[in-house]
Picture 1: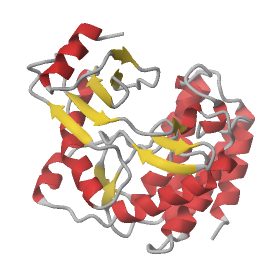
Picture 2: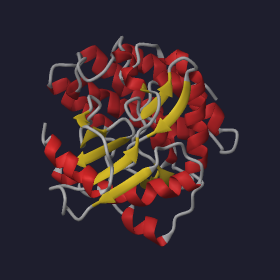
Picture 3: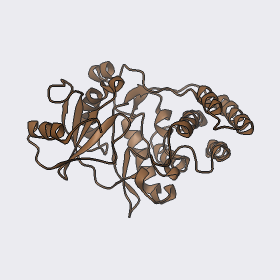
Picture 4: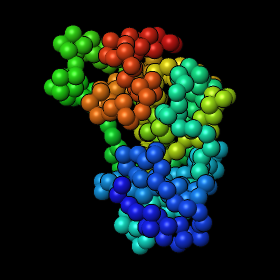
Length: 297
C-alpha cells in the first residue's frame, strides 16, 4: 500500500463524497484504487512516470461518454497535488465484474467481445481537436516483439524450438502487416482487467482506465484481449469500419509482444491464465492461434 485511508478520506471529503474508504483488490500497475462507500472509486497514481495519465483521463473520458462509450462517469480529477502527493481521478463505480477476475472462459463472453468491437468503432471515429492533440502528444508503450522474445529467451522462459516457432510467426505477420491507413483515437490498453462484464449474460458493462489513450494505430486496440475475443471484436467492428489482413496482422504482432512480456512479468497471482494474451498452453498455442486468426478474413 502506498497511500493511507486517512488520505483518501480527506480526498473524499474535499469533493463532498461520503462513505467508508477501503483499498480495492483491483489496484493496478499505475494507480491504487480505493472504494469510497459503494458508489465511487478513487484512483491515485503511484508511478512517477505516469503522472500525466490523470490529466489525460480528465479530458478524454467526458468526450468518450458524449459519444456513447460505456465508461464510468468521471466525478472529479485533480492534477494539482494539493490534496494528494500524486494526481488522482474519482469515478462512479462500474457495475459487474472485472473480466480478468472471472472464473468463466472467454467463450462465455462473446457478446461482450462484440460490444467491445462496436465501442472501438465509435471511439475510432471521434475527431481530433486541439485539446486532445496537445494531451495525446505522448509516446505510450510500443511493441518490440523481437526484443521481447530475446528477453524471454535470456530469462530461460523460451526454448530453442519455441524461439524458432515465434520467429517464423513474426515473419508471417510482418509479410502481411503493411501500413496503417489512418490514425485514430485509441484506448491503447483494453485488456480483461480494464473491462467490466455482467457474468450471467456475458455482456459488457464498462471499459475503464483511459490513461494510455493516444492518437495511433487502431490495430493496437485489438491486441490485448485473449485471442478468442479477436474474431467477435473484429466482426462487430467490420460493420462500420474496413478490416483487412493488414490490421489483423498488426494486432497479432502487438499481441505477441505483449504475450511474451506477460511470460516474464506476470504470475498466476495477478490473474487467471485464461485471460492472459499468452494462452495457458504456452508458446506453441500462441503461434497456432495467431496463424489461425490471420486466416479469419
